[in-house]
Length: 190
Ligand code: GLN
Image 1 (cartoon, rainbow, N blue to C red):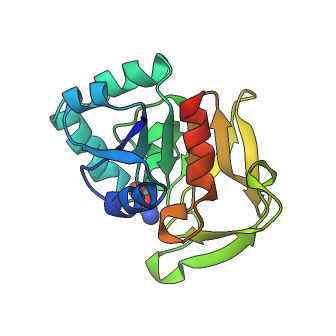
Image 2: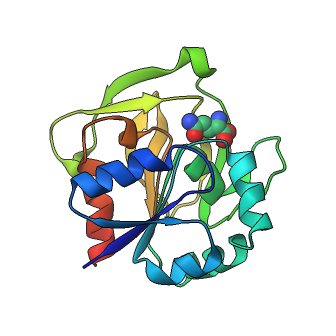
C-alpha cells in the first residue's frame, strides 16, 4: 500500500493529511530526513515559505529532499509548497529546493484579507470546474518549456507539472474536492 508523506514543519499540513486519509491513503507527517525513506510521495503544504525553508535547512531535510526529488520522488507543493519547489523567487532571497523550473512572485494575488475562490477549468481532472482557493498566493511569472501548464487563471499558470513534480498556487486541501490529490496519487502509482 502507498504511503504519502506530508511535510509537517509548518503550515496547513493537517488538512492534507485529512484529505488523504479520507481517500483511504496511509500518511506520514514528515519532520526528519529519515522520514523521507518511508514514503512513496510527498506533499509540501501551504504556509510561510520562508519559515518552512529555514526549518528545512535547520533539520537537515533540504539536501536529502532535493536528492530524492531529482531521483524521481513524486512531490506536490501547494502555495508556499510551490514557492519552495521553484528555482527562483522575484526580488527575494530565501532557501528553496529549486527543482521546478519556475520563477514565482510571492503574495502576487493580494493579502490575506483579499483571499478569494474562483472556479477554474482543469482538463486533466475532468469536466467539472474546480474551486481554487487563493490565500496570499504566488504567481508563476516564468517557466521553462518542460513545465506543463494544467490550469491557468488570468492568463497565468496556477497548476503545473514537470515530470514527478506537481505544484499549484491555490489550496485544494481547503476544499472538499479531492480530484487534484487523486491526480497526484496516480502520479505516485506510476
Ligand atoms: N505567502 C506565503 C509565502 O510566501 C504563501 C501563502 C500560502 O501558502 N497560503 O510563503
